[in-house]
Image (cartoon, rainbow, N blue to C red; front, side, top):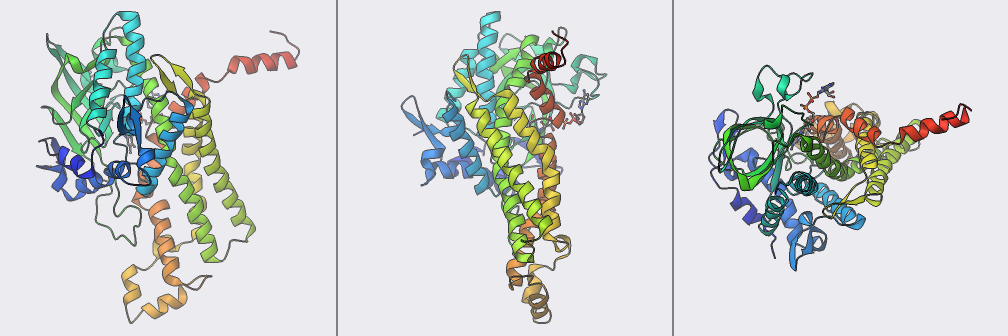
Length: 478
Ligand SMILES: Cc1cc2nc3c(=O)[nH]c(=O)nc-3n(C[C@H](O)[C@H](O)[C@H](O)COP(=O)(O)OP(=O)(O)OC[C@H]3O[C@@H](n4cnc5c(N)ncnc54)[C@H](O)[C@@H]3O)c2cc1C
């Protein structure tokens, strides 16, 4: 069986990688208090693949071997739905924080299979065997993978070749007989510090003259010249009672600096074929937005559940405006889930045998989630009340001087102040504090901005068909 244990995963990260945290190089990420939290969080994927009752869901049979479910290339709607359930289950176990170490990398691999096949067919390149070789190796060794796509981008109004500084998009600075040398910075790279290997993709479409920017490859994280500057967001110590979600769970992103990194040709998937940079970027997001919405499911369910719980504890469950808000939250959560399921059911088979979620539906799902998220938080905050930011600390309950008064005055409708405070702490962590801020920015930007989703969805909407309908009903013909 090619599935790593959590301990083997931790051990695999001791490889001399260059990671900086708050201005200091980290000698061993597994010994670092903040990074170790992210590692233990990510190890959930390996634990669930090992233990019952989740083993069946988190593994799959491929070529006679039991492997991580995430490495099974989807060939049907059923495969996508099982992938969705696995991502949802791991994220629920991670208390709304996604593990991502298998999801994002396999999203990139599935996209690379499609685009390498098309490029090889049209251009006579030989990229597909390299992608397949990486897939086999990563699957056999059950690698944790990160994906570096988003460039620093400089002036957003200009493309790669229009920038004053040519390094604002990752580029090839040297082509050698044995490989390429790349330079640039990719931003926001999730799980890079705790993955075994990284896949690099172009951010956007490229045009003639931008050949050096049309580049894709993979590399081990411990490759010389690859430097990861870890984000310290959400890294403070926190109490498990006052922060029931974020005390034990976090993901780490990095500023990912390619300080003239050599990549052997066997690891290169695109090097100058400008026509394929755009399709690769877009193909990745077809899969990655499916992953994104899958890991939002526990989050939106928890928004509904915590609002319902606070309504009970505050004694307002029967109030008209509260029922209205709970109804909106429930419909929001249900729409996100059903759109995602529909995107799997409406999916299509593409060369070389990859089942792809329906682009219009999956982008609509991600957009609907992101667009409604802040409003949903507002409803949860409204129902819970101001104690979200003014509640006493948990330690105050133990005080002989004030504990009895806290029990008397904070009990709400059901009579148990400690229970109500625990529920409030949950909502604060979920909808008010820095984890909430993280989820808010993640909703708007990660896996692409709202505009990117709207653009992708409208590109696949039959606008011409609807205009024809309007013309016909207006009696003005074609
Ligand atoms: C928590 C988190 C995790 C992430 N993980 C990863 C990861 O693992 N790997 C990875 O590669 N990326 C990752 N991302 C990056 C994510 O995909 C980007 O944040 C997203 O694509 C937006 O890019 P940006 O942050 O550079 O913002 P910008 O692109 O600068 O966007 C800011 C605003 O400018 C607008 N804008 C940008 N360009 C134009 C233009 N030309 N014309 C008009 N408007 C424009 C946008 O629509 C937006 O409103 C992550 C992001 C977050 C927040």
